[in-house]
Length: 242
Length: 267
Image (cartoon, rainbow over all chains, first blue to last red; front, side):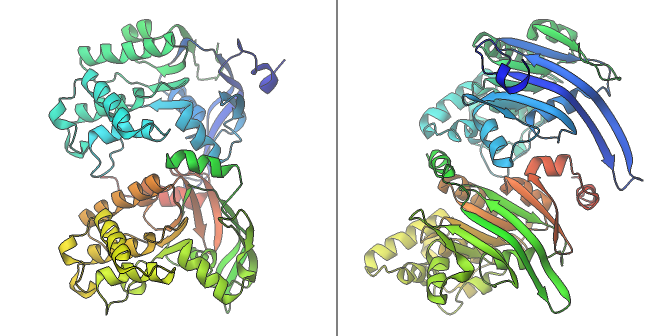
């Protein structure tokens, strides 16, 4: 059995990549075509955390962005279980991807895209508000997460635009982990964090795995990888995933 | 809650469907063969350089022009679908006043400069049948508060306001009647950066909280990224690329989009 049918069983993968390839065509630089990878097959099950590993330039971040729908898939299928069905991210319409991101799939990167004038507490509460959780409950959970990432309460009502780089990163992490998504994508979440906050990230990822989420991540730090991942998948420049 | 109601509405299909919209000015092409769906709660950004046809398209989608070719269907509150270009003039005007809003780049095009800020907003309510002065005044005050106007200035003329304040009055005037679909033409164009940021935040909050559908024309990719779910890139009257906003901006496929994205100054 392959593809969509096989994914409807309870013990089926939550994410399945089939023959995924990505290339970029740079039209304004002589039409150069850059092949990032080809023929990637990967299953990720509920309750596991897969670390993508490989030298720089093998397309680890690109693969995560493809799963999130942020990059367009050149060929292949990216199947994600969502709302009792299966969605092929490679073919889904924009409103379907937005819906899937809202309820099913979170993405945590190192960088916060600051929204002018929106206070940190609201930045973090927003994913909860978007699924219809009441303001007071969403803000309570957002505050808890900000506290866990050691953002002092006096900053919660301020817009993160004025925060230090490290504080912005932690606000972003709080926002990324505030929802219990069934699928969680994390791209170098611990880069440049101090030990205490790095441990908070690891705890969050392990908690996600424990509640049955499927996690795909990039962890540059070997110690973080050892503790945050349950399986390591090697990406090679030629493009085959183990 | 608005998110949930937008989802329920989504089962009924798109709110607005445009098919094969083409309009030219003599030999010059305004827009050519544009087809799109706009779903309930969805914000569509239209980007492109000056002269790319994005304002012409906006005028066709909002029925301010009837294009030379194409069809426009709109899902009414009753659940029926209306063929907008085939409607009678009076019926179409009623739809544009009640269910739709249009925010112009220049507030002078969307406001009556000779009457007060409060009257500009209240007028719109009276146009849809409100008659009770107290109730109108209450809604006007509520909306001017939501767009962060100083309520002490409700009886001042728009000419006495800054550009950013005028734009906020124009937004209140458009939203007070509870539209489901709002068209905006460069809503933050021509404003200082700080005023623009404040207005963007306001628009973002309003579209999120009200579950509004919107079509926003802008040449500013940062504005498009902040406000729109989906993006359409126009060049010489044609749509060259469309998709999820962050995907189009982070992984542009068409040569023109790649040029636009790579031309943005990084700060």
